[in-house]
Length: 174
Image (cartoon, rainbow, N blue to C red; front, side):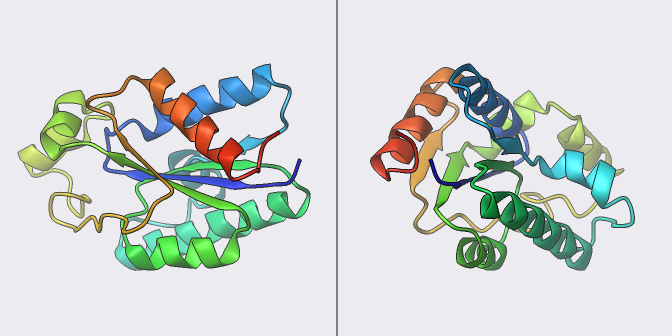
């Protein structure tokens, strides 16, 4: 098996972490070494010096790409859930990471706001959270992702199955 990247993008509340964790469970069950590089986890552990300005977000994304590149060099698949809101960062990641599979979790803003797993939408509405992607910062929808999943219509298991099907069809998994 060769290393590959599953780059999961979407609004906050679209299901990125849930689906990444379900993918991780699948890989563990299949005894496939892999890493989940969640943006929030990395921010808390290797990017504590960064805030949330667009420049700092870009620096975090580049660090995530760098760590992924190191793992891919050793054929360790990487699952990268994060908002990744700009076409530029997704293009950069695609150019830097081998066997790139972009997964766009397409979910209406209203549904993401209803889910609000981290309470961000509530804080945005209260005016205590600024620079929130999808509200006062744009989210640029991916133009040509390998997989588009409407997470308001599919459950996490269905999403994982579709991702695995795609990864297999690209011959990244046996």
